[in-house]
Image 1 (tube, helix red, strand yellow):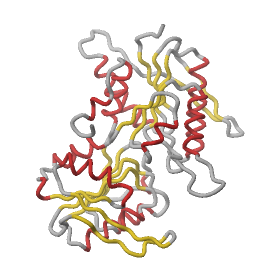
Image 2: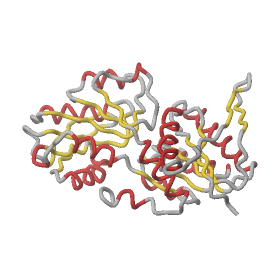
Image 3: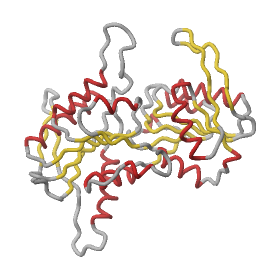
Length: 330
């Protein structure tokens, strides 16, 4: 029988986000209570001299509902291995249910065989997490939604869209002033959902490629001239694609350009490309922690902590998670 006590633990991948999530959960937990309680669990993670990871749980978790917050962001292999070891530790400590909260799911782009003799690494990672002992997955803005099907355990897939929508609505932008732009053909579905919620028209950048190089990029739809262009994507990695899209939109006469992406992977050179782009502001969320060298003056980080906290609370109480998106992403 599982205890009704919720405990949240985290690895070393994104401690600031985990602490914010727990702050929201503790606020709900202590509302109307005389004696303060906390959902925060304690786990000590260290490295042996040879680099191997060691995990020691400091709380009794027998029969508890346990949530482990650990995005598999860079360094991907280190954070993934740490997650697997934590899951195994809690399974062997007889936790009642283990939910792996993975705000950013690494290896998501290797989701199919696009050439001969290559792996489907996203499926391999899904197998590893399941075999380690996770009972459930909570993740956000998967690069490929079909990755949910790689797991043989329940997956709750969140979207950061409500966080972005709230930001643009608080700016006071009218639907008649904006246009949502899909930076490429693969992002059309995502852009269409944003456009539908915001009540804005949709434009798509059609790229013609020769190998890895874009030889021509044309705008379809619109109008763009004189509008505030909003470009949405699931992640910014090298920033080449979204910055190239911003250049196309700028050339088409957009009044202002905003780039919004859930995951700021921001590989080497990405910050400089974003700095030189015509975008007025770059919005990302805190699913991945940002070091100063990967930030720019016009970058703003929005938190998904409240969204994750609400989803964790709903999972704990066996309530609907999809209800969170009925007003934006059905």
